[in-house]
Length: 75
Image: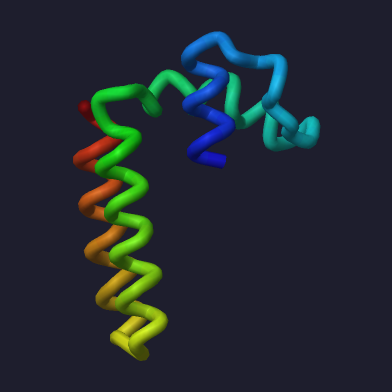
């Protein structure tokens, strides 16, 4: 979804493949995904995945991820 929203924000809609419900959501959400935050968002998601894969405390990891993503989406 992050990739698809980034493409929609940059007017590259030809290769975006979303379902109807996803497309409705993405029309509003894609404004928050841009070149200033896409790399950091991807990095934070990968870090969270790594920590969950290593059996970290999922509640703590997702709480931290939520706070970081909220900050990044405001950029």
